[in-house]
Image (cartoon, rainbow, N blue to C red; front, side, top):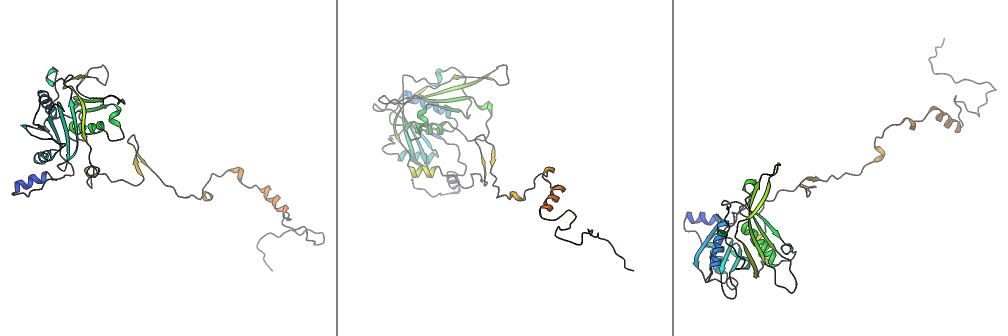
Length: 335
């Protein structure tokens, strides 16, 4: 990490405070750096990519003797000086022709790097496509085609996917106007075959057009607007595990508070869990049925079975053969 200088005045202090880590970071700016040797193809490619990246882009026209895989201190210095987290070095040599080195930094330290060699036979610049170009500052739609980009292990193609996403993603927004979706970035690659050369990465840019369809939804068409680039993957440098863990750390207060037993399903609907305690089914109120009530005949039968007659006199009592009726309850008056 580079040495932090102390601010000499209030203006420098405010500038350094803006570069400190924020809860909501600013949009990533891409810095294009020219190497010690370059080619006309690289100059055209850098100019086309910088035009699509406007206004979040900076360019260096002066040549710099930089070899990032041997010594990346110069790129770290440029990253801190210009407050840019993504750098692209254009360098041409006999061993590595038409090479673009994509470098990503965290805290102004190199996080990961990847080399992409441009194929000059299939290259077509932006100016060869005579059609309308998208407005400045619009967010593109990005599509990846190919299973090589979905590998569960860390490969050159998964690294390329991550770097290209950071390069073209633009400003973070919660809402997008449909009218602002004017162009598409398509990145594709074929399947890897053992014993053959690694597949190339095809980078295409398409203009989105909406036409009348006679229905509520319009008919969508795409038209290539350039530039057309085919890359061969070169050297790579994967991120350090500890540095990557630190880079992915989220500040406190940004994540929404989770409520107990409340979640979200794949369709975005809120789902809750209710835990019911043990129930006493014997005390549960059930519906009264007439057929379950005890009848009067049942009571008489039950009484006879116990040796008691219906009029309340026992069979074992003998009072001279005369039945003495049971006196009724009443009020007696004595004379």
